[in-house]
Every structure is written in structure tokens, then in C-alpha cells.
Length: 285
Ligand code: DGL
Image 1 (cartoon, rainbow, N blue to C red):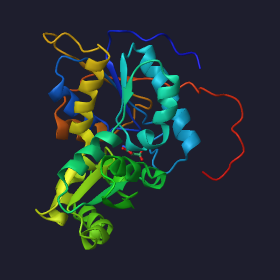
Image 2 (cartoon, helix red, strand yellow; image 1 turned 30 degrees about the vertical axis):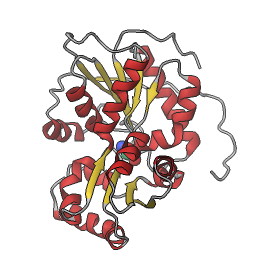
Image 3 (cartoon, helix red, strand yellow; image 1 turned 135 degrees about the horizontal axis):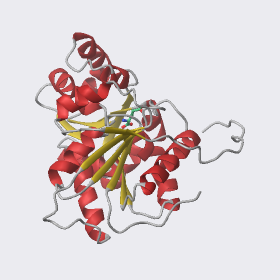
Image 4 (cartoon, rainbow, N blue to C red; image 1 turned 90 degrees about the vertical axis):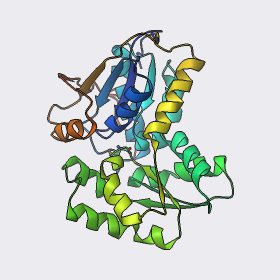
């Protein structure tokens, strides 16, 4: 793949399958106001959550190439699904440092749980990958981890049904077994889910801590930049540029209202297929 050389200055390239990763952007803007951010939402191909490893690896590398073309000095994978399935490939191939959302969220949950019973919700692909169990047990081998795929939540969020009885009902139906399992901490293992955090919190009640990886990912990004000597000068005022691979991201308005990021012009970036050869024969993943 024809990746260009890394730039030592330039924006942090942040991406997600769609708009959900803007929750990570909001945390990055708050923690790292000096940094320029170029956000790319792969709205042409959302959702990633039901797709297989080869597809998500290919999408991730194609998006990384677009971010490098924007001069990205580092990449933040603001998508749990891409983090779960494609971070090793990304780190093997792409010549700039990168960080995902799973380890930061897992570390925060491991630190905060009191009874050692942690729930994780995410897309089918994230949950099936086992990435959260591995990350949580790396932090604390004694944890009892309860994982659950909640595939209906992303479309509800993208539809803008953030405060809606239908969403409350779906949340309740999904989370009932986790309540029964006695978790005291729930990781929102999908960057879309913070948009329905209130519905989730209402259902779980006050005794359960909700961990969303956005702030923890921003902290990990700060560490990554400083370890690689890539932090922007502290007196700089960072900018935010948002681009989508398909301009019809209707949820962008809802996200903007919710997060107040001050998004102005939205660019369109077309994905050029990285691998035009035939796909390998389908095999179980
Ligand atoms: N926001 C993505 C994540 O964090 C999921 C959305 C999708 O299915 O594409 O996993």
C-alpha cells in the first residue's frame, strides 16, 4: 500500500465508521485544545459492527491512507470495532503512532470496579473478537467479565432517537441480564453509545458506574503524543475539520447539537480501494 512518509506536525487523524467517534473528538478537544484534528467518518460503509475481520482491516487501512494524505501525525481509532479487529494490522503497516479505544476503556473499568464484575456492551464484531475480555484480564486477571452485543443501538443512535421510549425499551431488554449478573461497572464498548448514556444510566440506576472510553482514549492520546514528541505547541489554538466518505450523514446535525463541537464545513473524502485484487475465499473467522 503506497503510504506516504509521516509528517511530524499536522493534525491528529481520528476515524470511526460513522459519527460515533465524535464523542472521542469532544474529549480530545477538551483535553488537548492545542491539537488540530482531522476527523473522518466512514459514512459510506457504516456500520462496521456486523462485518468480518478482513473487511474491517481493509477499511481501516484505506481510511488510514486518507488520513495520512491529510498529513496526520498520529491516528486515533475512535471505533471499538476497528480497534478490536484491525489495530495490529494498522500498527504493523502505518508509519505513524496510533491508539485505539479498547485498552484505555478497559483500564479505566478495571480501576473503578469494586466487586470485580464488569459488563461490556458493543457491536457484534467487537464482542465476538474477545478484545475486551483480553484487555480487562490483562489489567486484572481476577475480573469476572460479562460481554453483550447490542446491535440495535447503533441504528437507534444514527436515527437520532437519543431520548425516546423505544430506545429505553431496547436498552432495558439488552441490559437486563447484565443487571442480573451483578455487575457494578459497565463499559460502553462502542463510540455511538455515549449518545444514549442517559437512557442506559436510567435503566442501570445509581449503583453502577458507566465507563465510556472517550475520555480515557483522549488521555492515552496525550501520552502517545508526548512519548513520540509529537505534541502541538501549548500556545497553539487547535482546529477541527470533519470529513465523511458519504455526505449524507444525517446524524451529524444531532451529534453536533449534542456535543457542541462547532463543526462548520464538512468535507467529502472518497475511499479508494486499497486492494483491488480478488478477495480470498470466505473462511470462518
Ligand atoms: N462506533 C463503532 C464502534 O465503536 C460502531 C458502529 C458500527 O457498527 O459501525 O464500534
